[in-house]
Image 1 (spheres, rainbow, N blue to C red):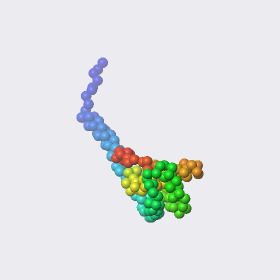
Image 2 (image 1 turned 90 degrees about the horizontal axis):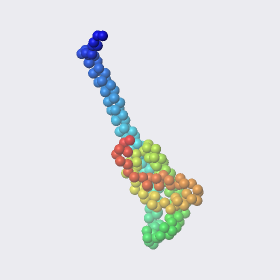
Image 3 (image 1 turned 180 degrees about the horizontal axis):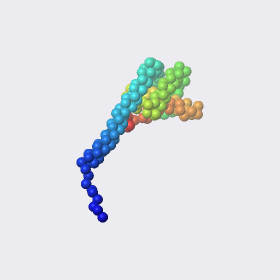
Image 4 (image 1 turned 30 degrees about the horizontal axis):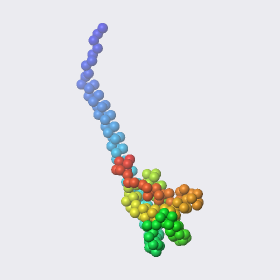
Amino acid sequence: MGKMNNKRTFLDTLSLAAQVVTNLSIVLGIFVAGITLLPDRYDRRVTTTLNLYQTYNEKIRNSYLDLVDKWQNYVHGVSDFRHMNQTGQEKVVLSFFADDVIRAKLENSLDFFDTLAICVNNRSCDTNTALDVLGKQVKNLYEISAYFTIEERSKDNDPTVGKGLEDLYKTNRKSLFATVF
């Protein structure tokens, strides 16, 4: 039996090295392409959120501010609202929202925050941006209307009344990793 020739020629080695470099280039290219798409996705979510914020400013903000102003004036006339028990506060809130004009302003805001919550929950909007630009409004409106929305849910047997606002109220800021991915 003859000996097998195990020696590689220089061209064989060069060909093997070229294949390895080609494969590494392909893998690196795929990795870089994936990484460059992530900021674009994030930027689109932020832009969508800011577009909704612009809609808020154009169509909802005045109604919201009027509602909060009316609430402040209404509560100012109630002695010790903050120190009342839950039943007393519920009665005050429900009597405030008995006014059709005030209720219409609330429903307008609730519809907007339902839309924003759907956008955030489906990751079409950025959570942190939404909380940065509208977090104060969410907090104020939820704390003003929670008793009313709970009452409406049970009265109408509709668990979705004010759900978007409640979801946003309970939402925490996301980490950078969660925001990008």
